[in-house]
Image (cartoon, rainbow, N blue to C red; front, side, top):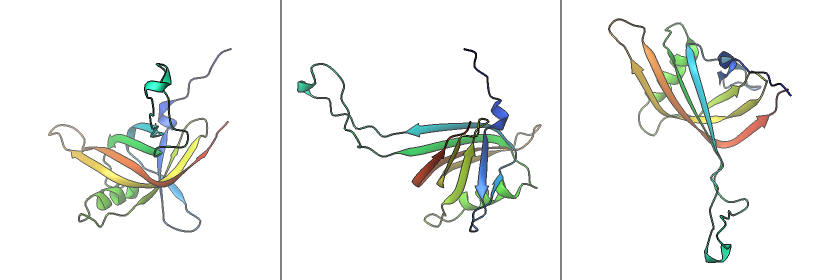
Length: 145
């Protein structure tokens, strides 16, 4: 059975506008998007496990981590919103509503905290950014096709 590859450029980070219902707009300038799903499995292996690893069903903390790298575009309102939030005074950062959409339509939605933001301005190249986000609260998943 042949599989079809999906183009990476269709893996999108989308920022919500805070309205009800939420409207999501693609964060422009992003070149690379990585997603890490951590189920926070709790290992309970012990001497009675007969040499096999065991885990606590339902234990642990589920989280979704996202990183994105891209080219800064001053005309892009979404990345400017993220930069403003990341630059807020300690303790005053808001949770930002985001969606991560894949080429096949898979969609993760949650609120995220900006863990880190790096901006780089090489002398002879475009300004770039590296963004790291972590989910806060419920993460919903809708399967694509």
